[in-house]
Length: 86
Image 1 (cartoon, one colour):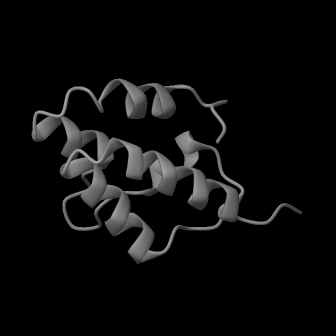
Image 2 (image 1 turned 180 degrees about the horizontal axis):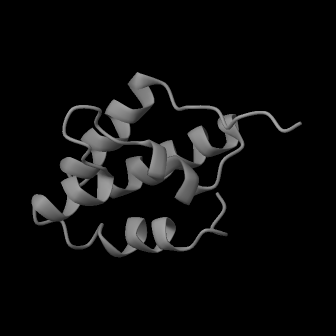
């Protein structure tokens, strides 16, 4: 029997969404690596779980909505590439 995947903490989700929203690409990358390693998840898996509960918005949404197009290719690639690992 396989164990269910761990869920990121509320704090980690908040930090991921905040960093995407304010265009802190380097800090976001570091946080993703740290959380992926801690949780044993790929970036795609982590970003798929890092969703604001009320709006259902994700990091890609916040980056794009705030005009941070430089951040969009990274998260888009990580989300759409199921085998992407930290």
